[in-house]
Image (tube, rainbow over all chains, first blue to last red; front, side):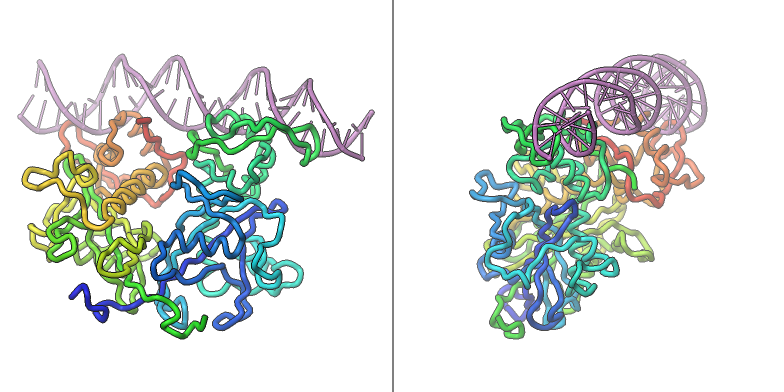
Length: 255
Length: 255
DNA sequence: TCAAAAGTGTTGCGATTACACCCATGC
DNA sequence: GCATGGGTGTAATCGCAACACTTTTGA
């Protein structure tokens, strides 16, 4: 095969799709957008778009994330993260079934983003076409899709991609400090615990959880103040420490 | 953007590259091929090739693996694995830096394959252009590259891909039964231990290792016989059990 | 007989669990 | 006062590291 002959290899379209997760009202939620055109017109789908001609895959994902949420992606390998509200962003997996898009051959490089609960709606998107939906409803449509939404599955193979992203997040918070990516810059131990409980769908012992996270060097650093925004006794505020790997890991209770 | 207009999105070439690992002579080794044409002519590279127009990504990786090694890939999700010598095959990550191939825009979906030590050289490849090389030499060229090889780095970004694949293998044998993919169909506990020692580059206590693996339900099932091929007292032969996840995991000693 | 590899028993230690219990605030 | 969530103390238990020790072969 001549390496310079474009006809010697088949051309592909390459896209990035985003699994953007957050924790809202004690539930793990994903960002979905309503499709305005065929195929799957009117159905919900993961945000995404084409990779540009001279754009790296991670840069394309960060650009799509900023367009949809206004978040600045924080690449874990980047020594100087962008200013402003940050989100964790990492490559998830690549999906290239020849039949996955009926229009043409599309290979999609899915990325996983973890974001804190955003108080304001996303800028640059109108409320009818983008929303946070609990992943449980997105992955089990028969469970109901909120009040006013019909229980239809996600477009394309996005249910599979979302399931893979959720599974990645569930396992990764076990052995890394990634759960702090779901929290605001300053947070309490209780708020961090509620993140674990929402992502795993289990209840954790608050006392043992507190000892575990405060006793792991580099996981949390005191921010200095306290807050009563959760009610009860004032809780210390913490910031995420420098450690990325948790050793020993946080143990996920048996099913 | 009109979804049907080919000029609306840039065309990419999509390839699969393979990180094929095995354990030979107590060292973790990777399969590399010598490039016969520019760019990087004469340099070693990971095996790989273009994805065909109607081929799934995993199928392309399995095809390339069979072409290079004669191994039948065993997709972990496949309920009826192909007959013959099997190898574990899974997607690793996707590399799409615009500058990674000087000829054109190439997105490469790297896959990781784990194979037992193959007694015969690979069929369909001549010995001068394909070889097993210790990953330590491939990733640290100054350490020497065997007797007759100059210490040159791998072509393209393949050193990075190889490092990612090695890291995936090292962490995955911690919490899964994947180490058995490096062993022949029937193997002893000592042989399995030497796999862990080679992949991690550490020494493990034979007594505690034995208790650990034989005490984990579903990890190993007795094959019935014994062997003295490692010398010393005859050792029981085992086959890989059905379990894929190890809980609690095998603990990797501190560096 | 000796070296080498396979196994078993035992002890101490560190981490996790499942609690009892106290603390500080808003209402 | 009382409910609510925050935080500390403690004892039972589990799993692992670090050995001593026995078994079974080949040379």
